[in-house]
Amino acid sequence: MSIVEFPRHACASGDWSPGELQQLIALFRADTAGTSYAVGATERGEPQFYLLGPAPEQDCVLCVSRLAQGYVVEDGAGRLIGETPSLDRFAVEAARAAMRGGRSFMARVTLAWCTIRLAIEEKLEPMFEESQELLVRFAPQVAALV
Amino acid sequence: MVRSRQAEKAAPKGMELRKRAGAWLQERRKTAGLSQIELAQRLGLKYYTFISQVENGFGRVPSDSMEAWARALGVAPAEFTRHLLAFYEPELHKLLFEVKS
Image 1: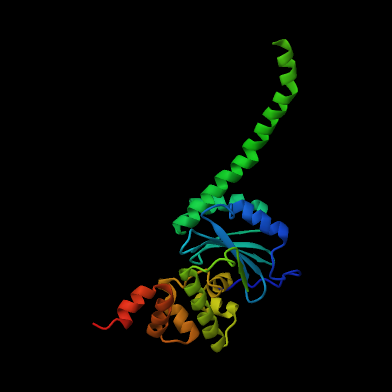
Image 2 (image 1 turned 45 degrees about the vertical axis):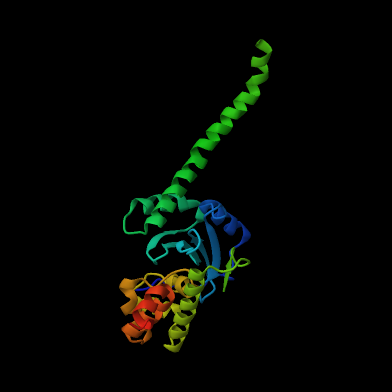
């Protein structure tokens, strides 16, 4: 097997941009109780995001690395979960990975949860917002009739 | 280079030991004159990101590939495994190699 050696990213500084980091934290709910995260970098300076399991062991559940041509997601044992050109497409990759076997249980549960949550956010929340808008619009008229 | 949300708190023992294991592995790799990419190549990995994950203390060398890692780094597999066991499973290492019967 030949290794994929991406060319250095033009702006690979070893740091996540604040936007990317916020996106990753939100994606994995990495700032909630029971989970935490850490960031690091490869020898070549590409940033890595580690999603950690519960204390005291805090084993790495998932690792997201940003390489020149996209993001690589691996579980804590180094098994490749997916490659995605953008974090926005992560939901699709996560869904695929969660369905496949051979990954660590924790990684699959995390990915499945991510997929469900993102689907809810994408599909259901706009519906709720629409209902709220209708309610706000018609409530005064309904109230006037009562 | 690693920053952690837990940096301000005392590092848990397990994580601290994994970091020490990672530092030792990085030292072995440098002694062998290999980059992370070259080591990944020798291990048949598609990406070298896992090497970094392990060296930064956020992953462990899987037990089923310890022999391959040892050979890639030019260390005797038994010595390599025993050394990593001291970090990954300190109690087991103590029972196997330190406690006198």
